[in-house]
Length: 581
Ligand code: ARG
Image 1 (cartoon, rainbow, N blue to C red):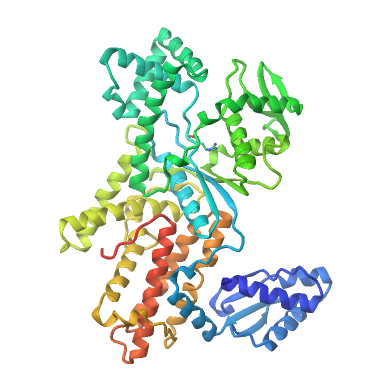
Image 2: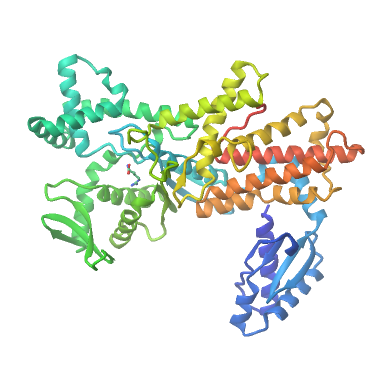
């Protein structure tokens, strides 16, 4: 089933083609910007009229007349407005027919995309030398939401957790770990806190030249495959991944071991990447380092900016690995789109790598490489979020704090629930709160992390939406609601019902937009507006106490459809709903 927007776009495109004789006409239908403009509006007529040198209002009038003559059951009325817009008013009967169909088949709330693509979502991707900190939160949950959304639309999603597990830092860590083992025997307990372990190793490295030298040698031995070094490295990586998995589990993030796309995976491929660049005469040696200069990348002074692919000591870089990954994704995985959900501060890196990959043929001609950039999470002081001592906040600590705060909130609103119940609810609400606060912001801006607004029961927050859902579910649990909530005879009898109904039918348009442009906040805004329209309906329209049985049943069906839409929408954000709160 087409979404309302798709349906109207093709209806208007056909009428436009009929009037103009042109094959490709884009009526550019969007949801109406104001209620008085109807439900949708077509904005594309003016541009088309201009191209044809005809009068836009006159063309709009002819198109509207043509559609009205066709008696389309979904259209109540079209009106020409302003310089040549067409305002579209949909018929109640048409909306109700769709609603009944969806009430019978809730999976139709979000129908599959017309053509399925293979999409890589590269996200989370922490550096395994350290513990995950708040800087990893955004990428992890935005990426996970995009993976869920694309999958729901029927695309083949390949999650790639491109963890940093290779390079100089690991030499230092291995050398330190080896020393600890020599002193304390087996695997030291020290690894329980990777942050502390890293800091100790670094201090050791900085203060002891002999150790620093051993550290440098161990990278070389690791990268050349010395079994003793590989074994220690593997132990470290294993431990670090376990830390990540605890976080993924707490966060309800869908990444698993199978999604690992570690940097080390590309070790053997890297010399070939450099070789290919050389064969294609793209390589320049500058100060002993091998670089690619692309004419479009210049610095502030107009100086050419290099993409370094091999250092003078022979070591490879982050860029080299990304080129190898693009090659794999293009030619072995047959990917249509590759999304990189990574901090905005890496924008230049990705622009350069994408450009080199295209020039060198590491990217297939059809692959779309997209940097899904996100801004920084800030503290209330306007600086990047930190602990009081200026350290990065560990993600684990942040999540535990959120659950603690959610417990207080739940105790406040539902003191009668048992302690077990409150704990269960707090665990869900706490995680949902952190995720939703992030997902609901436009990803490209920095945002201020503030407990008091994100845990509020009012406003665009997880607690508000979860509470709205739980309240609808409590109505639906009423004995009088048992059979009737399943009734498919939705009708419209009060003015607050139609806007709610229309909104319910718009979920798939929003989901498509998220899949296309990668802005999860569009889905959050949608769910927040939906909950608002539901509250208006709830306050104005008696449900269980409705006088006529048919009206009661219809309203219960609207409640059920709203709850289902909230549930599915939140699920796409990676948030579990609660039956009680
Ligand atoms: N590990 C990198 C970091 O911590 C992020 C990797 C992102 N993905 C990629 N394909 N470059 O900054």
